Length: 209
Picture 1 (tube, rainbow, N blue to C red):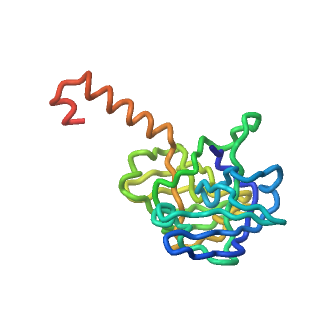
Picture 2: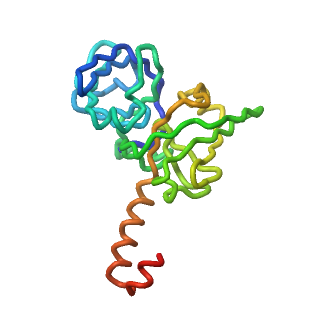
C-alpha cells in the first residue's frame, strides 16, 4: 500500500525483453534506504516487487498482465519514473490510500500553465468515470491528486510547483500516456451498495438504478 507521495525520480537503466515479460533495472537512491529483496516499490503508480538489489539500482520483473494494462510497456533506458516505497504504519498519510494496482491508462489531453500552477486535463477510460467526483482523489502515474473537475471522458487536476518539480508530471505533454488508479474506497462502496440493492430493493428499482 502507498500514499501517492512520490519520494524520488528514478531513471530506467536497463530494459530486458523476456518475450512475455520484461526486467526493469532502475537507478535510485532514496527508495533503496532500508529496502530488501521482496519489498514493494511503486513505479509510476504500479506496485513492483524488488527482485534484485545493486549499488544505486534495483530490478523488478513485469509480467504480461502488467505490460498489457499499464504504460510501463513503453519505458526505455533514460526515462524518468516516479518512485515510492510501500507505506509503514508510522508514516503520515499525506496523500490517500493507493494500492499500486493500475485501473487503466489515460492520456494527457492538454495542459494550461499559469504563474503558480498548471491545469492538466487527462482522458479517462469509460469504466473509471463513475469513481471520480469533483474534489475527490485520483492517482496519476503514482501521484496522489485532487480532481478539479470530473467529466465523462476526462478530468482535470491542478499541479502545484512541488508536484511539477518532483514528479514526472512536470514534463508530461499532450499525447503522453499515464497510469490511473481510482480511489479504492469508491470501488468498495459501489460493491457494497450493489450487494445491498440486490437483496433489499424490489427488482424494478434495481433495474432503474
